[in-house]
Image (cartoon, rainbow, N blue to C red):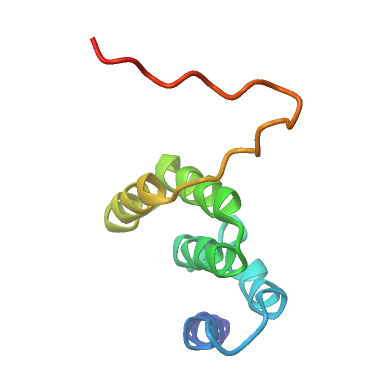
Length: 108
């Protein structure tokens, strides 16, 4: 049954987070994250985890925010996506070496 096969793929990714490459994990998650998939929300949540593991916090945050904004996302997943996205620090681009450093705040 495709439903059970897809669940097995989802669980394979979950257990393989520390063992496999992000590319291999994403390849398994791609079909599961497609619109209309019953595992879409869980697969997208795992895509964000894979992005974090791959050192891509901006991509992870974007995926989680989209998941949180999707009205078809189950409430528990939506809430968790919002909370995790809020905790992801997205690095800003390094300052241009030729530009002056930002002024320090002054006490007032």
